[in-house]
Image (cartoon, rainbow, N blue to C red; front, side):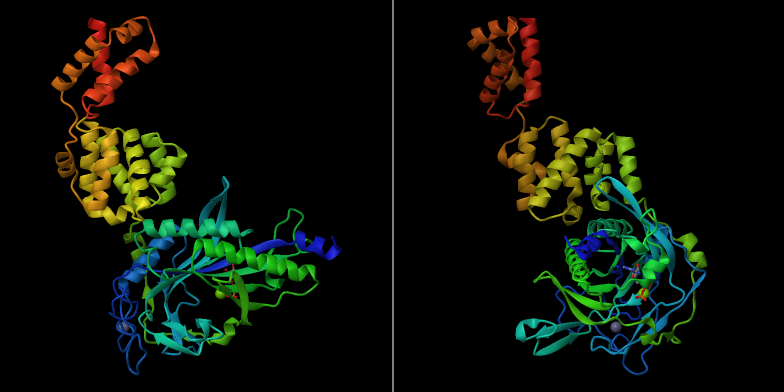
Length: 498
Ligand code: ADP
Ligand code: ZN
Ligand code: MG
């Protein structure tokens, strides 16, 4: 290894994120246009305000501010008594006003943090700030392969213009791409619990990642990276990342690219790069713009907003980490099961409904393994069957009360419920799944004992397999509709009497 190559290995990786999160509101942030853009024709969710027509004025959406304050509380951020908006000026075809309304010197959140766990190690990632802003429109590059740099022409759709975003800016606290992936998953989970985010929406999470390498000589004896080293480092900003996995891949690529450059004795240019997902590479877009390039100035069409009293009034639900801990303590669940059952608020809420009525372990097996497994197999989530949760509770009840066997519940009833939309009682009736009643089992037990004297003798001789053999006979005689536990019990009782 050359000295330069060795030095490149010694460089510490530093990553900081700017995450754009779409807030779940019914209308856009400064006008009344609907944010329900799924299947919408281009340029149909627009009005003079979000098209930036002369004279149209913005009016702030209260729900967007409330959502931002919920996030602030969840990440333990400081919310100023007053907040305000600025204009960030730049020209781009997706931005009809030629400025974006955003926040600058008084963002809604400052100095928050989020804990992430990677390989059992928990680290705190600082959140420098989070602010509200409007989304620009979207561009569609067409012809010439559709690449940003090869397209023949570009179409613009202003449906997205004015969709409320929260930009979350982290401290440069990440030391490897895997931490970024874990952070994004944690952030999404928190946002989803707060009810202000829908990860299923197209473009609901977009990430710009800043990356630099800090030579060993610029770190403290303990290996820490100080503010001077951070400021001195040339960094690249990778744009166009839209998933957790994409973030990890883009960053792994970018770290390797920078290491290779350092190994060859080249300097890293301070620039903005574009993550090309399909090719799995980052490509240079432009030299990095500086803040002064944007000529920020106050948005005079929106008054200063006093939020001090909102912060007290707005409440947030129990967050994922706290809920996981409570599930472990209250229901005695393992870490892994608690994690599965708190992955979304809908799953956790459903589990609690079931656990309140049945044994928590039985409820956990049903929800975490059986139901989530079958849903997952069909690419569905609890949210997709939210309106039918009573039916699923009803199914578990049928099993708990011994009306149907667990096997039939799982393999016949649940599947018919999901595939055909049937109610559980309807399936049980149609398929004749009701467990064999007492009398029928009693008759089958007596017959099994009569017809198998050898097995009975073996049972009295203490042979383990004998009882199982007899259970099998009874199950066969009742066409598998008896509950094996009940058969076992009655056989034992009959043999003990005999
Ligand atoms: P800018 O002026 O480019 O917006 P900021 O100080 O606002 O710079 O930081 C933007 C992002 O860059 C933040 O996410 C921050 O964590 C990250 N960042 C700052 N310094 C570094 C660095 N040396 N390496 C990687 N990321 C960094
Ligand atoms: Zn509008
Ligand atoms: Mg910045």
